[in-house]
Length: 125
Image (cartoon, rainbow, N blue to C red):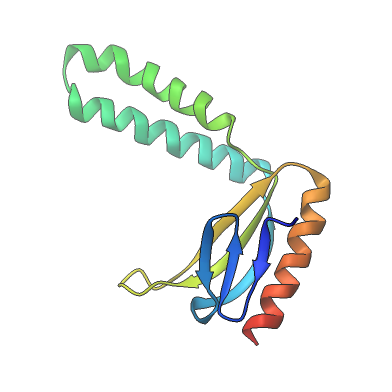
């Protein structure tokens, strides 16, 4: 049984549902080293910034670099070579943005994602 389902009104992956009326496009994104490095750096910076906000003096000077490293290491376990993304129209001021539905580093997943992109594009046109 497939984790994906394109119905009359929704695109479903496992328990997540996306209304087809809000999907503008779909794609398989192949992440590069630059994408991974940016994700690692930004996550490390965000985690470090949270520590700086909580402890701006003394203790924060010691813990912020450690938090940065922990953020980078933690994120390193979540990087994916391929992502199935949909261009989604939000109902608030966010507007249109690419949303990652799922990701994987396996080459065979890319073929599955490409099939789903085709199915979604057929359903929204």
